[in-house]
Image (cartoon, rainbow, N blue to C red; front, side, top):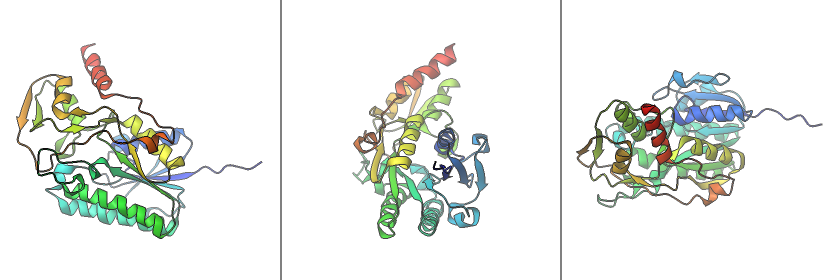
Length: 296
């Protein structure tokens, strides 16, 4: 009888919002997990018993990881559009130098890479000058460039990879503070603390808000069965930012439009669905549960 060896996976950004949910899911699936996180936005509060947490920058990955990894889930990147216009050097450090470090580690050590791409690659800046989503900011440019580089590394060096794309992920464990806060959690905290919602004009900019549980389901399927580019993990439900604020209720403050204003729609999910994925959660239900819990 053949003995099955427990697979070892690496999650970069494993102490972050999506990364921590992924670690929990992979642990439940029976994987052995190493997390590499520099704790720029990650938190030790997200630690899960059974995961091997290591502190470090992805550009120094070879200093921190000596093991042979079966699957690398690369989520550990800077992830804010508007804020990146104020700190492009930080985006370069984390998303260009950091990701190159991961790709070189992959090239030398082998294994499969699952890269977390951004839906901004295909978003349009409606209401502005029509700039392509990938060119809206240092963040969007870096993410689109990295997705292309991952595909090329896979082809150049004959390595297995999958590129998945995230769509405005929300759910338990988000954070609301400062420039790095997420929109849904910010509005949630506004609602719970009876504060007004700040919405940048025109307010009609849309997002395909996708629950973190659905997102993680897609990531795991991509790691197990996906091959190549184009695995969009996108909700079918599209809402404008103003509509989301109205769902929560309360006062809305309109603010000037930003240079990084954009809209994104629900995208083609046929590739991820071919692996067995389907959307199970809706934003409206998530918000209703928050409101119900507060009023209980």
